[in-house]
Image 1 (cartoon, rainbow, N blue to C red):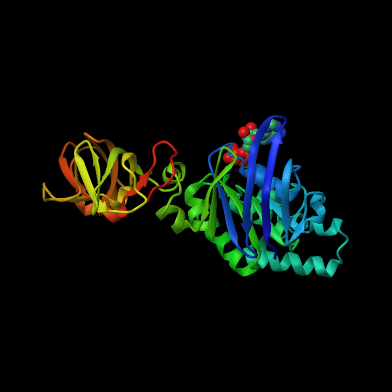
Image 2 (image 1 turned 90 degrees about the vertical axis):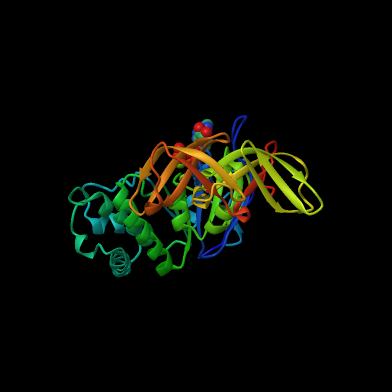
Length: 358
Ligand SMILES: Nc1ncnc2c1ncn2[C@@H]1O[C@H](COP(=O)(O)OP(=O)(O)OP(=O)(O)O)[C@@H](O)[C@H]1O
Ligand SMILES: [Mg+2]
């Protein structure tokens, strides 16, 4: 168990900065997910903790000890990679025991740790098998088991589920969450998949272009995205964005765009000008009343039925929108519909700085 701190940590390859002065604290026993698009620096950040990449500037500490100059072996971490290459000629038991044997840990202790990890991962009955006789999900468990037996202070996982099929990923996700609860150890988990990030993390750190965009609980980053990048990266289907103009009187704020006008309570920090309005697809509600407050009219272009709900792809004067409605409220393709929104659910962003206004 240990806290991990990035203190203005930077990584650059000659002139190319891939991690910009990152400051982030991962609490003791926390499950932190680093998420962002391909190439944003997630793996690099993880490898900096592991000691597999040198740190160009700043500090990284594990358990209140600066580790910048510490060899990976001395950092008391264990890493699970995407390609979890097991030794094909060794049994599952020997694969899991290998690192402990190298460290000359007594045989009885190795036996105890491997059996305990195998029990936690429910692979006890596979201990005598060779990797080729295992399914993808079982191999992934062995790879995680190999990390567990080392009893590290921190687990680092770099896209450990991305080689698995969609269904297995979902069940392994739940297994990893259970494992975290059982081990009560710090987990730092990298993924490009925002759903994996939302479902696994106590907190999520969102990176883009090597810069930290926001760090918070899944609920915080979803409900109050700090900027347009986070707003559109988190959530599926993604948040709708509309161009509009903000005007304030002494009592209300009006958000006006082509074919819509929303009124909000006045706030001192709003100033008049262009804004981007963000609307989550589930906050658009189809209604019968053609002239309600906070309405948008649009035509249904495509319907995607998903069973319990449907995604509606809509077009109107304000541009294209996606709405998420209950299956029984699904309109027909070609239908003209009226949508309304609870003004309290609007997100406003400054189109120039791309940061959140409200
Ligand atoms: N040895 C290197 N020399 C130069 N640039 C590098 C090196 N290793 C990585 N990079 C660059 O650093 C950036 C971050 O890479 P990184 O592997 O951390 O991305 P990532 O977020 O893990 O992406 P992915 O989701 O594709 O795994 C990329 O632009 C990459 O090209
Ligand atoms: Mg990566």
